[in-house]
Length: 509
Image 1 (tube, helix red, strand yellow):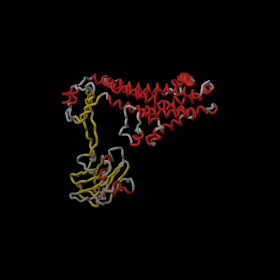
Image 2 (cartoon, one colour):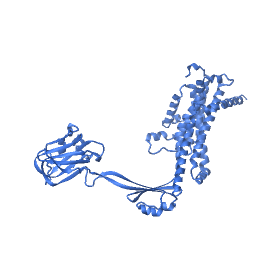
Image 3 (cartoon, one colour):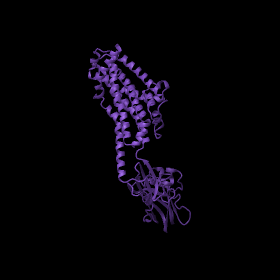
Image 4 (cartoon, helix red, strand yellow):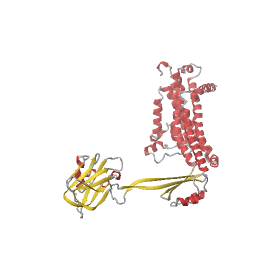
């Protein structure tokens, strides 16, 4: 009889506390956590419906015609076969490629007719293809009628070099193998490089080894330059006029046609008049969306939304009354403190379960809203009801476990940030812990209840994949029993804490 009376008292307290649990100004933000996934999926569903409406307005193309496409077909052939597309977009792209006449950053320039000159000067007009204003020349070679490099080892001058080790002599030493230390380099408004052949010689051609010849990026090759010759180092004649642009723009004409067969969107991309790629995919991927939902539920909803939602609801049940200086009213009431604890915990559990289990089911319904009714009906007839049950139960048991922890924390510590940070860290590292310690994690049990596994993406770092991967799962019955035992242990600690609780509002902030 006494137990029945205590249960009635606890229920009365829970009914009184439900208002605080549902609409407390300190925890109103938990609704945002619960509804955020639903809002995201709703936005995606509306976008999919709008996309379907726009595609359908352009007409439907029979699916067999779309499936019969093959690479290499011309746009005219595809248009004749499939008819008018929903969308037709054309554009061109360009990329810089090495001129076929240039090999490894080396340019060769014949001089016709040949000239008699003692001094040969290289004027840099545009040092590179990008914004870099540094001129880089690895070798500047001058030839007459034979194979002899007339400039090899000859005296040279230039605009101020980048450093003492990158002077003009490096461009006439016959080597490019030394990398950046084997080049001439100069910064400034009009860089130049000049060699003295020692006497007037017949000059028939020049060879210039740019940055690419030394292993540097081709974008650093000299873009524009001129070569001048002189007999007296006073009057110079231009013999090569601005012909140093050795990277050319490769232009590719693209065309994209979009068709819709009522279920799938086909995106056909042509390059230079030939079908280069075909991307045919369902506008709505039922299996893919279910996997996405499973990932959102496990990685966001359980780990963050339920966690911080319970922090806001359960920490406020005692800590909020301490801040409002009203907790003494409960302690003076004719009810045991254990009954008070049970009533407040029950109120928080009801509120959090309604909010987060309901939020999980709402999110699932929003996800299914835009899919083919036949697929949805088959899903409900198959595993759909079981999935909905286990998702809701996992969310509810998350509230059971995390609620007990934060209720106890509200009795033991003043600042909610500290227990939240400790528990969040503990839940994150629990896969690394020994098996015995893993059983002290709420998340360890919740992951075993999820009906659809959601492995982390392969693109994630290995450490993050390990953190997100569930530890060795328990059976569902074992998970429920283990979580309830863990909750009972935490509530036992909270019962001892409330039994020793003494109110001194002067110490509360």
